[in-house]
Structures are given as C-alpha cells and as structure tokens.
Amino acid sequence: MANQHSSNIKIASAAFAATMLLGVQTGALAVECKGMEKSACEKNAAQCTWVDPYTRKDGAKVNGYCRTKGGKKSASTKG
Image (cartoon, rainbow, N blue to C red; front, side):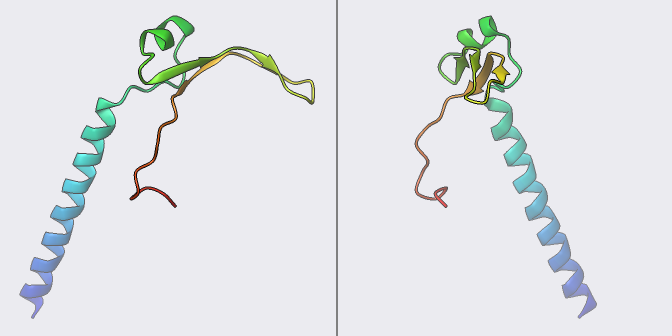
C-alpha cells in the first residue's frame, strides 16, 4: 500500500514539474514589454505598444511606458 502511495506521489511530482517547465518555456518565448524604453518597445511592435505620457483627471502625471498589446482571449481562458 505504501509503495503505491509513493508511486502516486512520484507521478504527481513529475506531472507538476513538467507543467512548470512547459510554462517557463512558453513564457520565455513571449517578449516582456514592461520596463522597455520607447525605442525597444517600438521595435517589438507586434507584441508591445507604447503609451505616451499623460495627465490623469486628478492631476497626476503618468510617464510614458511600454505594455503588452491586448489580444483576444481563447474560450479556455475566459473567466
């Protein structure tokens, strides 16, 4: 009985590790737009967009920044 429990734990651990590795690999392929300078952001225009500086309604000034472009979510990611 203990041997079967140990096997189940090993299988679950391996599945978790594989999931984490796949997630890391997928994330590594994406461009990290946050924190990019304007020129670098514009070079990655397929995935990033530059937001020019602006002043909010409350008077606070917001510096320009690079952000990931929004996209359509797949049916499995809609919440």
